[in-house]
Length: 262
Ligand code: 5RP
Image (tube, rainbow, N blue to C red; front, side, top):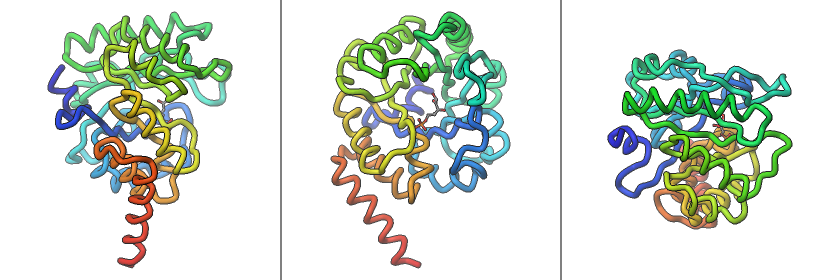
């Protein structure tokens, strides 16, 4: 378990840049990931961990690729349905082991009418993962009608931990210190919908300042104008303690260097 955790969260500084490209499991061919390998392969040298589904892993990522995998093991709903995120188990832990993953991720929906289903399925995954020494990341997803505030995120994150999560993935909100304070396992943030690069960098910075160990970011990287420059900038915040301004300058420098080499 510890060995796998240290593949996800780097022991040199206790931080991680996870690249999330699992969106297809409920969003289909998400903008930027239509040809997932073309987008993701050049980003891998800048990421510590890759989070994706088994279908994406099997079809797009060559087995020789040197990147720890966090496998999404929940799903079963799509953006076409109102019960979005009423997820169940989609991968057996046997297959997760066969795929040699460093961790698995499961979405829980605290506060939704079907919260019990997602929480109990989550604990089934935790039970099996414990016997195999595989860390489980609880993704505290937020339903359309739920309030995204520190009180809710702290509640959902703590429930995830009490039920056995080894890492919690949640969203950055004002007062994030409160979420981290009452969550005794490492916390990473999702990026959420694509926003301006400067704003995404500020969010990553604020989360780290509040005690998050890193990001598990998707759309704000692969839908950025220059995804390589963007993941590099995020990396300088997470591992280099850069301010958002410094990271933005770094992003501009990488872009400029690329153009000047053409
Ligand atoms: C949904 C998820 C996503 O599939 C994804 O990993 C989120 O990444 P981002 O919001 O940064 O695009 O975890 O709950």
